[in-house]
Image (cartoon, rainbow, N blue to C red):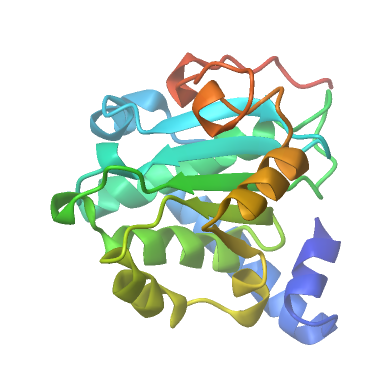
Length: 214
């Protein structure tokens, strides 16, 4: 875990220590129970826009986000809790009996059939900023699929808030060759049929994680 903070701060021990202390204080105040229960984010879960597909070929949990099922949240504090809820659960699904501390996730943002009513730059910025500030080095890769022309300007805006290290992990899939690489890198066993795999979509709230070993 400490190594993740060091990598995020270019191996500078002082900056890494400051980041770690900030994370501890944030975690204690924002997640006092140690987790965000489903009951606190039911409005977001009911939309069934987040799917947890199992582990990629490299052993990373795969999270799929359906942009067409998302609408800008009226309750921003609750949305931030939802971001923590889903990141915690996705990462925990990669634990093999117990947490090592270096587990990473793969995110897939599917923008197919989104309209202007689904566009939410604020949500994207919040999600990525939480990853950068409170989940350093937890993102293995993030794939953007089916980006419509009108979303390009939105993505340019979001990108301005992302660190270089984060941007380097984001891949925009825009042609058949890139889609083939995407399927090969993630794995057919966890990707749904619509993305070139063999699996079924599994809503994150339907995934039950096994208890951790002592």
